[in-house]
Length: 461
Image 1 (cartoon, rainbow, N blue to C red):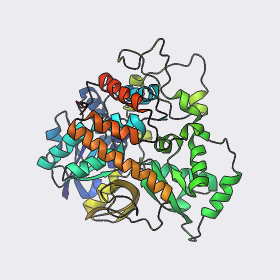
Image 2: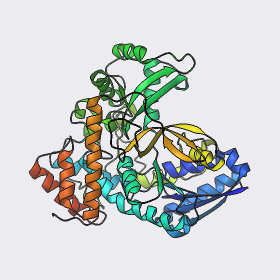
Image 3: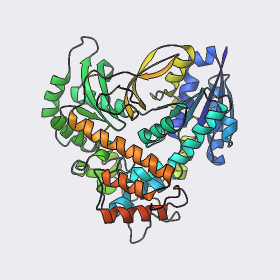
Image 4: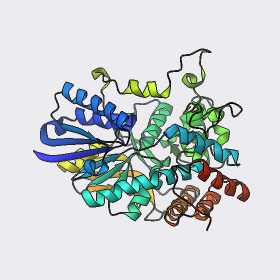
C-alpha cells in the first residue's frame, strides 16, 4: 500500500483536529488501501497530549492500524508530509474579545471582528507570522504537500501564503453548507435535493443558481415566493440580513448575518445579538487583562443562548474543552468537512466536486482579480484542486464590495512585510466599517499596545 502522511498542525484544536481525526478513522478506503501515518503537532503540550490520547483510543477501538504520533516540533511533523491540515489560534476568545470591542470603542460599527472589519485585520496580522512559518518550513521539508487551511481569517491568510510561498494551498470552510441548510429550511425540502452554484468571498458568498437535482427545475422563483411569506422574525440573527440582501441584490447570501455583515456598513440593524457579543462589564472587568474573566462567546441570539436560568452552572472554557477530549465511540461521526475527502481524492486519483474552496481566483469569478483568493466550487482529483468557473456573474454591487476586500488583503500583506502602521491604517480607512481618521489612528496604536506580545512589530512610516 502507498504511504500517506497526514500532519495536523494545531492538533489541540477541538473542532477541526478532532473532526479530521474522526473522518480519518471512519475512512474505510484509507484504512484498507493506504499505509497511513498521522503526525499530531501543537505548541501546547497539554492540548497535544489530550488529542493524542483521544486519537490512539479511537483508532484502537475502530481497529484502524494507522501509525499515530505526537510532537511539539514543527519540523518533525512536516518532514515528508503529503498533506498538512492547519487549524491554529492562540487564546482565541481572549484576543477575539479585544478584536471586537476595541475597534468599536474607537468608533467602528463592526459586528463580529473575526474575518471582516478592523478587528479581522489584527486577527490576520497575529496569524500571518505563524502561518508563513509553517508554509516556509513546508517548502524545505515537504515542498509537494498540500497546505489545507482551516485557520481564520481564511481568505486573507490563504492569499498571503499563495503570494509569498510556492506551497499548494487551499482554504476550507463550511459556511456555504450553512447557506444550503437555510435555503432548504425556507423551501421546506431535503437539502440533498438541492443543486447549487455559489461563490464570492469567504463568509460573503452568494447563490447564483438553485435547482432540483432530480428534475433540473430552477428553484429560485419558488424560493423568492417562500421567503416573501416567511415569518420576518424567525431565526432573526441567522436569516434577517440574508433575506434583506436577497431583496436588495437578487441573490441569497451565505453563511448568515454575523458573518456576511462583517463586510457591509448596515448589518447592525439585523443582528439582535450584537450587544451579547463577548458581553462584559467594563466597570469590573478588563478585556485587556488576561487575569480578568474572558467574556463568553455568543454566536447569535436564539433560545439556547439567551434563555438562561439565574444560577446555571458555569462549566468554564477549560472544563468544556477537557470534556470534548473524552473519547466515546457513540460520538464518532463524519464531520462534513472537506479535508479528508480531498486527501482521498488526490491520493487515490478519484474525482469529486466540493461545495467551497478558497484559492486564487484565476478567472473563476468574473470581475475579480486573478490573484485574489475567492471561494466557490472546486474539482479535486489526482492532479490537485481547481476552482470551477461560475457560469452566472455576480451583480456589480457585490463585485465592488468584494473588490474592496481584495484591496484590503493586499494592504495587510504590505503592512506585514513593511512593518507599517500606515499601510494598516490605509486598510482600515478603506473598510465599510471604518471610524474617523483620528479614531482609526488611535485604534491602531491601542491595539498594537494591547496585543504587543502577539502582533508583529509595526511603526508609523
